Length: 101
Image 1: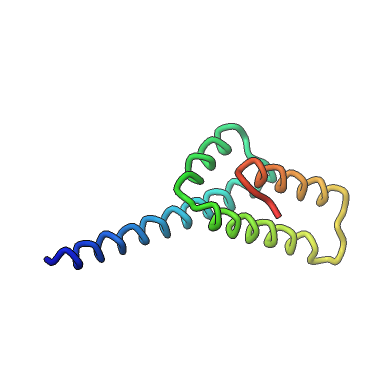
Image 2: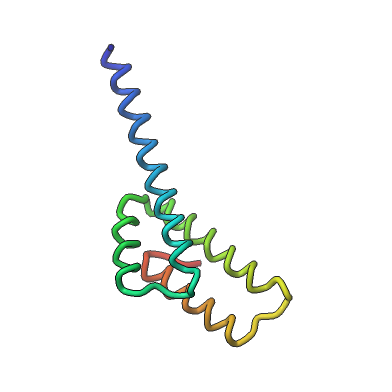
């Protein structure tokens, strides 16, 4: 293989690793948030997974998760006190993980 072919292969592999890290982080955070909060162990794992995600991608993931939660809560056109508390918990968790809209 030529040096260019090797470099192209390495670049492609790095892009694949980055995409896998984004997917893994997104799926983990989304699943962990189903109960509305992170316990210490979940937060620790999420922070570790976040290290493999660029700051720009982290913002996109967090925005996507926040919008999904907000859409679910607003299906009936109202935001109850309980739902507002849940949304606040999601916001605090995402902020602790690096960013929240």
